[in-house]
Image (cartoon, rainbow, N blue to C red; front, top):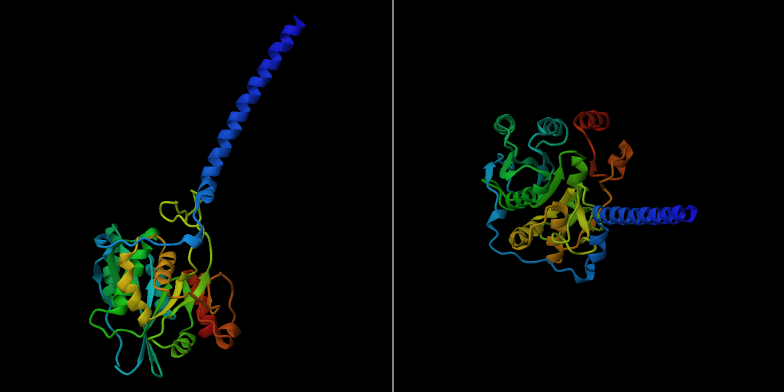
Length: 322
């Protein structure tokens, strides 16, 4: 009898162990999938990079629904248009930018014209606020594409389209594409602009050289169908990108012939790589959230710094430049 019980017990232990192994195996497979490890193992080498051409992509044409007023005043100046990417609901942030660095300026022979690009929202109240804001400040470029993070490439298209051939306005020599949570030192930006030539191929800012996120729950997760390669082309952070009119021209002529990509900074890098325009790294476009003191702004030539909420922007700007 005792021997029989031991035999039964061994079978039970073996059965439990087998079940545990199946459970562990199943959990491991799920974790591999969630963390994107299967995708990582299936990536193509970046050495094989080639991006598909897609012609007649009518769905990539977003209509303009609001135009800013042209504020360039002279034919003889160097013209810099700052196109500030902003979420439609960020009205208070746009007001803070206007109270600090986001206003028209003419310094020596350089004119600076800031405008905001926003997408469409279904919320009628937000839509009405944008209409009133556009009428009051005359600095809003609104587009028909739905305002969402993964539609930022539509804002890029709008910025390039409008920046290269603005409505009822002189075409600028340079474009500075920047997010509304940046602080910008306009005098340093003007000095930087004066050192450039509009006919040069310029695609400059804080450059990243990274791999795609494959983790399924990550904000920046990308599937193999969307992007099969092991690395992205070196890209300038979309938060602050400086380009010449010649670069804008080439971008405009090519961008709708390429397969769409949801992240505007990576898409711009794909566009630049296709056109053989190198990404130029510049430490004076500060991406990482950190305190930049007056000395760095005034003596070291910092141009733009990322990571300012509305109150922080106004407070720090007034402390440093007020």
